[in-house]
Amino acid sequence: MQLSTHTTPSGFLLPSIHSAHPFFTEQPNTATQCTFDEHWTRLILSYARYRHLFILRVEDAEVAGGDWDEILRNERINRRILPNYLASLISKLVSRNLAFYEPPKQTRSVVVLWRLPEEWADVLHSWATATGQLNSILTFYEITDPPVPSPLSGIPVSLLRRAITILTRSGRAQVIGVADGEGVRLLASGK
Amino acid sequence: MSALVNQYSTVRVYFTLMHRLGGVGLAAFERQRESQRSFAELSSELSRTQIDHLHTSLTQFRSALTHFASTHRDSIRKDPTFRHAFQQMCSSIGVDPLAGPRKGGWWAEMLGLGDWQHELGVQIVDICVSTRERNGGVIELGELVRMVSKLRGVESGVITEEDVIRSIKTLQPLGAGYEVIDVGNGKKMVRNVMKELDEDQAVVLAEAQTEGGRIVEEILVTRRGWTPERAKAALENMLLRDGLCWLDAQDERHGKAYWIPSAMSWDD
Image 1 (cartoon, each protein chain N blue to C red):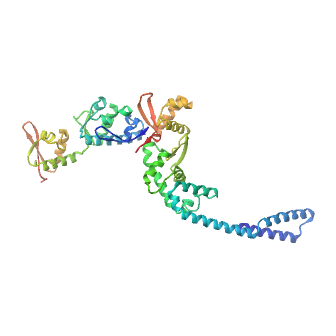
Image 2: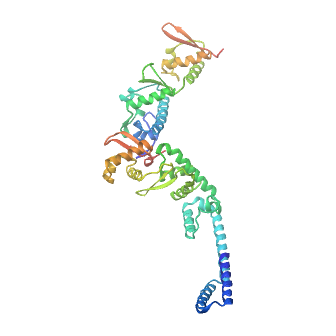
Image 3: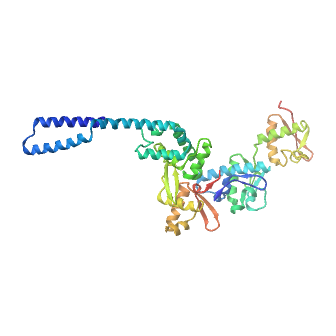
């Protein structure tokens, strides 16, 4: 069989290992599985970045039709990643700080960190600066669902909160309680 | 050459001595006559002139070969057909290009191809090490040649399987298990780990080659007459112990199938 890269309908380039039947089976040989872990991690993160996806669930391996089908399934070779395998990969992402369980105290759903919270903090600050919104009070909703799409569109609140925490530590943000939720004031520079 | 000349001189001296001493009795005389005849034959076959002539010819031949080599060094580097012909010529006159006092043998000494040979060896090791994770330390020769060629680029000339095989011979002293293995069906594999391929594994590799990398116990039982236990043991060892194959637990026909990455064709 010829193992080659493949471009998905959404324009994402899959690596050649994705065309290998065994790639969708959790390997009993630990050394081999380590290699597969690396490949899957890279694949999940780059696909999330490409499609701007934040949430990965074990359910995405159980039910078809979700956002992740292009990588969790390969129709051409009739293979898909099974829920147990995905759960195992997810826990590895978490232990490498490339994802966190959200909501906490469960292990079926994660927020994928294709950008680290530190990087999100910088993105948030740059966006506020560029759109002239420094020093104004912004609700979380205005950040996650702005009228004009931004790099932060769709960001889960849990991740946004982490980014804001990082900014407050360097004096670049102030958390404000607003009428029906949370808000933040982004400041020019640390004191 | 000089050894022969010395021998001849010694023979002449002996002959003179025998003659002087005159021998002892009739038997001795007969023996002496016999010896004289043999030595006479020897002396007629190898005259001093002939020896000198042979000596000169050999020296001329050697310098002609050296001149040829240096003139055609570029051709040897770039053209695999020419390289092959040169190798054949060396073999036919009993010169082993890999032997010699200097490392790299004649290739290094006469042709200044030491660097070329060395570079190829390093590239082979490079490819083998970088694919080891994927194939467990066994790579198909054709794939190795393809990947080395890609690494070298177009300008440096074509590399053939023969070049790679020759280079691998020079890698043996590394003690890292570099070895070319013939698995039948005209396919060769290059092992680059210390774990030797046992015969059963070689058979598994050969069968996997015909199926694009996929192998199941049933194939070994029906095509090779193995017992199910033997097939299972071989495949499980390759999977768990040696990391030479991967598991596919969603195989439509058999539930469980094994895939040999070194027998799959990668389009990397």
